[in-house]
Amino acid sequence: MKMKKYLAIMCVAGVACVANASVVWDEGVDGDLSDDALNNATVLDLSMGSNNVIGNIGGSGIDFVDGMEITIGAGETLASVTLVDFVVSGGNTATLFNVFDASTAFLGSVSMTTGDIGSDLLALSGINTLGPGTFIIEMREGIPNQNYEISYNLIPAPASMALLGLGGLVASRRRR
Image 1 (tube, one colour):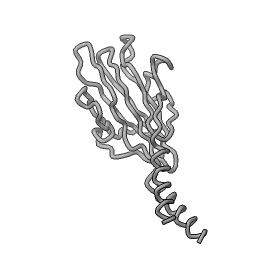
Image 2 (cartoon, one colour):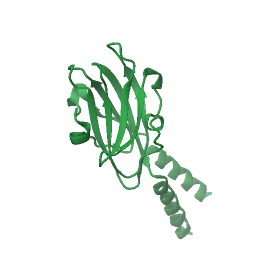
Image 3 (cartoon, one colour):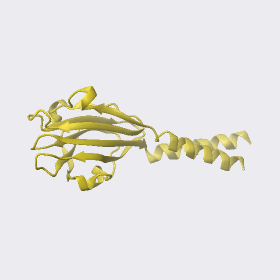
Image 4 (cartoon, one colour):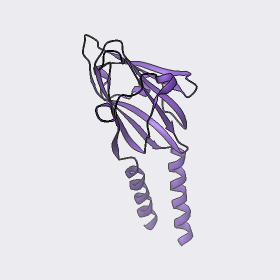
């Protein structure tokens, strides 16, 4: 009985560590994201859970790129990048979501539309998940004033959760 209770607590703790949500960048508050994604992307500090970015591409009429650099640490997985909101204007209906590795090697892309709200942009880009490493996310537009919100969903790597569970089993056996 104690083992079941312990495992239930471990499961709740695992879910709780990924349940937080925060805005890590809001261009209306924090300033413009870099418009030179491949050479000088804005560094985002992600934590476990949902990390939202609220941006505007082309609001000044000349800024047609938002570049974000993210680092996935050891024991972490970027499970998804969800399109939370997307408002188009100026006759345009889509914006490019591009993914590169730290060496700027192209990994995947999708032309996102309002129909993709709620979807995983990584999966639509042909990328399942991203493991440890540094990556560049580029939002690219040709017509000004596209507003978006995306959510980086960072979770413990499956192996980390397995080790956490295994540690719990070992600890519970020692007590007997």
